[in-house]
Length: 196
Image (tube, rainbow, N blue to C red; front, side, top):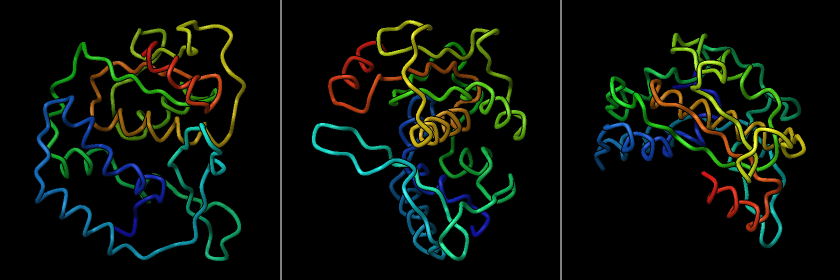
């Protein structure tokens, strides 16, 4: 458990939603076991990747683990985190399902490196490629257009990658639709949700 990248801790329990979409069953005993294991992990200095939101704004949940001094991000390697197989096993996900299904992810701002970073994650863990050229990955703005994407934001880019990685781990055969809201406001998120 100590190998786990901190950002995956925040997302682990949300994988249950994706598992339900892909045919995996989540049992309360299994969820309790995972929750207990997470509680036993030594705490490390960490920080949010996005600032605290103001009224009427959405928050991203991703956090980054910091070095022992609590100053710079911990330099993690692939062996420091859960692999997709760990998540699939923990949630009893049938990865043969999902072909033809699409997982829509709604986040704020743009991650200009989303497709490139997704390719790195998927190739690192032996997952099938998911690219815009193959029709597996698509990134649109809150109106559904592939052009005129929102302004990039490093914090939200961390949340976007966390979401894309967890969707890939839970459903490696699913297509991925990333809908980027123009801002973290409830109105923009609502528009992006409608597009999704």
